[in-house]
Image 1 (cartoon, rainbow, N blue to C red):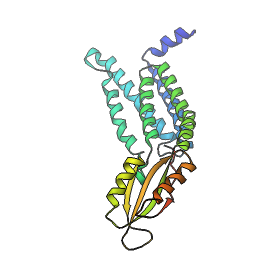
Image 2 (cartoon, helix red, strand yellow):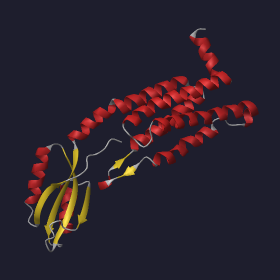
Image 3 (cartoon, rainbow, N blue to C red):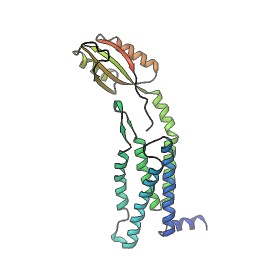
Image 4 (cartoon, rainbow, N blue to C red):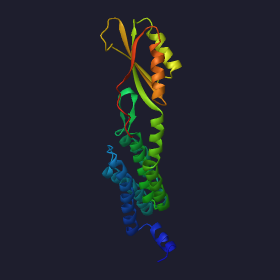
Length: 239
């Protein structure tokens, strides 16, 4: 059996091609899930397999109904609902942590893409399923390293300072937004417990440690700033 004969046979809708499509979906979903499992993400190996196989099943059900009922049935209608419905599953992997730091977006996007790969398997679009899985693997395993390197060059840090008196708080927060391009500002109770002091935590982006020192020195020069320090902040986690 040559490749063209095999491809033609796999495109037919029969019990053997159904088995091939389901097991291919299991394999491809598992490959994507392995990477997420190694990263200890909420949706790992088994979740990605179930999503991919489930999406494949919806495509197969659509084809089965179309073969049984003919043109009165739409073979893509059921699968179309998977593309929108998988978003609810993805939401469960997204977490908002301190300073509005969001994790889980990559996992959620991976689940959505895994569902699309499963649908491709179900319809017998093998080339797209295989190429899509390869692209997902490259994105997750290789491009992450490039992204990580970029994040290290542009690190986000928290600066804590205390302002003497409340009358200058608005002026200083405007300065942080406009001059230092703050990502977030949080007004808190003073850690020093000094009367009339106002605590301010500012989230800023820096290129290197030298820039951190320069910005701290710039903040400390402000008249009403009692002191300013680099605050302890959790490191960004992988999505």
